[in-house]
Amino acid sequence: FNKLSNDEIIRIAGRLKSIDPEVVRGFVSFAQGSAGEMVRLLDSEAYNSMRSSAMELPYVIGTGDFLKASELISKFSSGRQEAENFLKLLLIVYRDILAVNSGRKMEETVFNMDSKNKLIDYSVRISPNKSIESIYKIEEALNYLNSNVGIPLIFDNLVIKLREVNNG
Image (tube, rainbow, N blue to C red):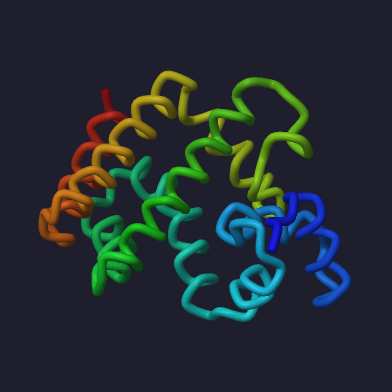
């Protein structure tokens, strides 16, 4: 089977689920070219919770509330796949913040269009350099995950590093 393009997945999911294409864009990258995977993700409460937490984390990091940030992120430390998915969602959020900062059309560059107001707010608070540095820290956490470092340690370290980036 050939993988579908992102636009094809958005169209199919919109028809199957009658969902606004802006909402679907945030799920596209995780569908990996599969309309069936897209539908499964749209129905997944766990995925929606993970995505919601990933969208909230930059705000919480900005407030300096280390405890709340740790609580948000620790919910996804029960397994390597879950931790990896959360980190990838967080990468997408920071990529979206960077895309908003770039001044390009959001409709063409942002995955989480259903959260565009949050992303605009974050882009005012988080400079492009801080977004890039945050992306590096998240990629570093993914590398640690692939090196079998303990997930709670990776997440605690990531929260500290993201806070340092934000305050630096």
